Length: 325
Length: 269
Ligand SMILES: Nc1ncnc2c1ncn2[C@@H]1O[C@H](COP(=O)(O)OP(=O)(O)OP(=O)(O)O)[C@@H](O)[C@H]1O
Ligand SMILES: [Mg+2]
Image (cartoon, rainbow over all chains, first blue to last red; front, side, top):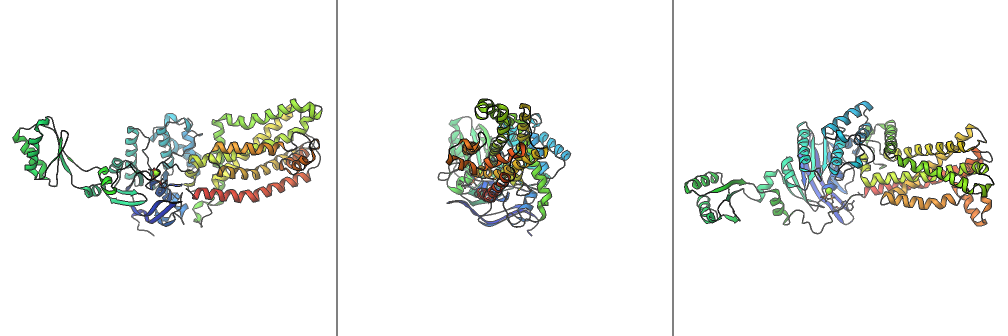
């Protein structure tokens, strides 16, 4: 038995497709009741990882334990605990939204009445009531996505896998999905979600694991990852460009480090918390005009660039457009 | 799915749960028809059209009268239609595989064989419906049962048994094909000659000698003969045994092949 505080534990996981090494020795672990963000560019191995954890794919080597059960030797036990929303919506297009949900509930052994009640509850939660009686093939991409997600929640899984859950959702739907994930986690669900959006991992995940070419290139909290790239910086936006030299001199005097100028923005590394106060005081005294003054953390994009040497989405060699099946 | 993996323990819920899940999945396939009534037309209107066309276009020329020809052709059309309806098994399975529905089902704690079994059972229901429909239309056109209701029941059971066996061929096609359209294309292209090079429409004696040999061993001919015997009268035992032997042989070859191909496709990711 694993330590009970661990919902997912992965050791040295390998999986290749022909010559492509989709996972080349991945370790990770997810605390019960927390959110792990699996982050990586196209072809990093995110979907492969999720499919192995959901028992759809066997690893070539290594071990994966989900909810205390081995995904290979105790696959059926794992299936009782997990819900999966795959990267590509997998609903029965010929059935209505409600029938899709009732079907899953019935397969999970619920009575007819319980299945209907659960379906209606989920339809309401995902704002699909108006389309409940329409065939899923007439749904928009976002609606289908939501139905797919609802389908993976029918059995109230303890552990939920979401493979790029917000791809194809409009901003409003994305926000409401984020809220849903937070609600589920507050109720005790463990979530592993993959995403290519760094802000999404930042917003939702307690811990982030960054994958690239099937390997973990970084792991930790968002703040820890950001700290690896460097300090925060103080950014000032000026109204009047002619004041740039004066403001630059002021910043250097206050903080000691040479500032960087970018258009009408000027920034300086802010290792010391006292810097902001000092700068504001000096600005006040000097009478120089500033539009905006902010302390900014590095974005996860910065982190990715720093760790891999290439930006996300510029993953040259790999075929990222692979569609399973 | 049919992944015969090491004992997963009692979590499966056992055989009974598996059968119930199969029933639920069969219900799903039948629900699909409710929302796509044209699909019903595919395997309802087409055979009826075939029956009417052959009856009135060729009936006079082949049998002298449409009444006599109806007695000859109805059992044959039932068999021919059964062969075509098996394509739906492959088509549906391939759709599930390519559209991700199969993965959704595989990720559930249900019996590994339930998704495939559900598919096959649902298509047996379609088969039964087609048989009833063709018989109904036949009786309206003046078909006379030469045997007994028991013969009629025997015919239905025999045709369904062979349908079950032939479904395994289409399962294999469904697993190997890239997309549902290819299943349909391949299915109908391969099945047209099989059904027409038979004694469904014309008595075998009218054909050249070499063709008679082919027609005689064709399982469609054997089954059509058995169906005639059971509905109109005439020899039953011989052709029925041959049909069952074919069913057994087809199952023995294609069931393991299909399951292996399916597991391989799933393992490939
Ligand atoms: N079934 C398969 N057959 C062949 N190659 C595959 C298969 N599945 C994945 N791959 C390859 O394995 C690598 C990892 O793929 P995976 O789908 O896990 O990446 P991903 O991180 O999910 O990417 P994306 O962001 O594009 O979804 C890719 O190079 C991909 O082409
Ligand atoms: Mg993916």
